[in-house]
Length: 139
Image (cartoon, rainbow, N blue to C red; front, side, top):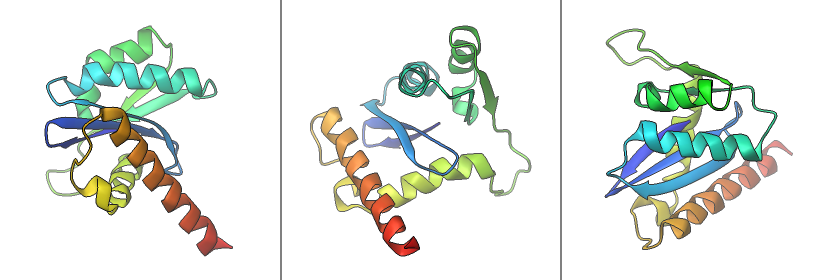
């Protein structure tokens, strides 16, 4: 689970442990991560019933963690800072890597889209393109 702010909007994504996109939601930036996270996590769980838990950063503690544990009856692991310096946290790095890959797409480098659904679909298209490129490289 991860969220990235872009010019008045926020992107929240959920991925599997391999970095494959499960769900994305784009919304206005005036909504807190923890509240928007509830909606994103619930939609992800409805699509993928086999999910047994979620991981997220400190922005999702509180409301989102409580919602997942009490309403969805799933585990929610919050990644904690290990040191004050930069340290790669393996699970969190998967989501950050997806944002970095997607932001290489011209249409996602800035927020060109008027409609948030169009922005979500541009992100999906970017992730499909990345997946196809990786499959071609592996074969």
